[in-house]
Image 1 (tube, chains in turn yellow, orange):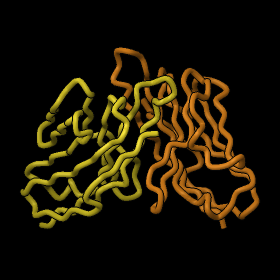
Image 2: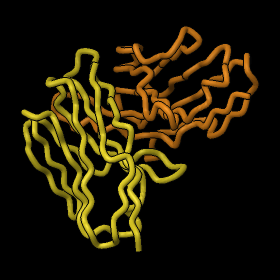
Image 3: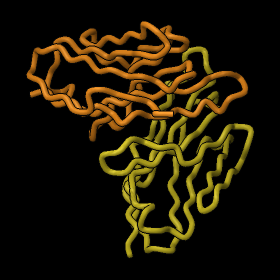
Image 4: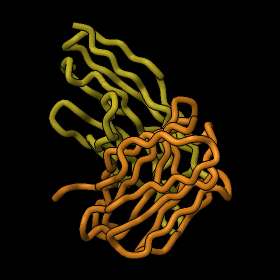
Length: 114
Length: 116
């Protein structure tokens, strides 16, 4: 099955700086890569996603890049703000036929220092 | 839309007891997923349904776990008998899956289960 590795497990950045979280996946057939943000005691919420036919996607301060050849994808947050502090999860999903569930990375605890 | 609804939000039970978690997906969604979250293992997919049919239950840890989806608006996850290592937050998520949709998975608020 799919295996997703996520790094780093903890990331501390100064407010206003950029944060980058990286993930690798093992199944070359995976075609959908969402990122979820989870605040303490809350549910995971989708912040951005990318499909395998696209190399980069941006939404305001958040961007995701995908390198299919290397099987890795990254989350970029620019101009970080205190409300960006949370745990971020990357995930990968296969191509159907029983592979619709998401495989998650172990999460990155992002800490924004004031 | 009310989003995905889960009940109960918190459950404390004793080892050996039966536990039933409930989920109501977003209206119109045709896929439903059960995930479990623990500090040690992170977010794990337990089982998912498409059009009320179980598609993949390979993530269900043991025969003590079972899940049903009798109709498009209701699913249950049952643990019988429960054990302390089942303590976790259980999330239900739903999506609308077809060839054209983004099939984003929306998570419910979760059920925090504590087995003493």
